[in-house]
Length: 583
Image (tube, rainbow, N blue to C red; front, side):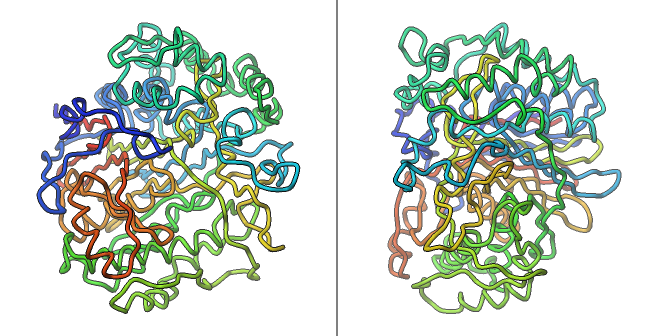
């Protein structure tokens, strides 16, 4: 068996905590390497199966399932159940997820949408104050108003129903054991609790769990969550119905409606929730197909657009140290994000030109804008071909801040799974349900404004609608088989993290651990963010000379990647505490 911790994990534990700034410093920045291609440990290799996830206990739970001959779907259930316990700030039963699955038997790529939904009683004015102005972001986040109907438990069950091979009940053994016997609090969880203790104090139940005796959880102390264990026992015995009906659901609804800022979630919302199968969005790149989650996620479309815009440029010849390569990547991202803000939302509620946005002819035309020598002075949405009458939308004005996690798995039969799972902001709504889990604040991924100068915004709140996401679980296919399984947390920067990793592996020939550890440079809306404490800072001056506004800051991804070939190669992000395990 091969196990690898992220290469900087041991040193990272010796470094001081940094400020959160909502998303960046929820882990310690990696060491700077030599040149942009960061020196790092070799990827984990294996012959048969591989799991990569954001916490060692979760990876070990998945490995135990795969060792017993379980499928990738079986292992995901075990991994997610543990993640919801050991990194509750990032994902869990009270949140949602997107899953991309390659079925080796059929050769098909399927996506499952387990995104949270807006309650039936939600209106487009949910986050407007009495004067009709948008609420402050954290004013909207903290409390029940931001909570959507959770989707993760039903997604776990649906994936197992389709692709599971082991007994459902057996998949929760490790998570139940850790919940009832206790697990050691990680440095990352301790740091995050310390940074967010004011908001965590807003709810009595939340404070009791994360701030016992008024003090934040400390690294290394044993934390028990018997309520979570009882919830998992119920789900293991009765399936997801145990979560969406009866005592657990009643506890969720009561918590939302009884919050200081009450929400509108109801038992009807819980009982009506469904997971949706959606067609994968696949975009060509370098002879491969980059496949992921379509709307309500903007992930596959925006990643696909970035790569499609770059298709005609020889990034391989430029290399990862080239300012010109990063000029092209940065402006391709800006162009893609302009389309994202205008057109992408829940396609069950608004028409989305899904095929048109990744149409090679459209992207080739848009790519002509990249032909100059300097950064684009202005970026506007394009006019992708619609397969129906085009509508006029205003640009979205929503924020999307993380906390999220990602799971990549390949099993012995060749099935591959990429799942990004979230409760949105760190610690979600800061509401801790009686069942021992945090509730999401996913509704704040909607645009707070409904219109802009009278023009409707596609991603506005509507009853039953799923908020737009940037989660980008991805499987890269070549000759009908998976070659790369990738995804990351990170809010709307997820898209840049995933695109960069694909480019690093496919254009620059990096192995998956090198690609994951490569310093981040992300440009979404005009400002080029460069990862602090890494050699990316050396590009600040050249990119400024090319006309970009540059900002050096922490960029905390959580990439977990598996390359599939004659052997499996796994990579875990050194910016977090994850682990790849293979055998």
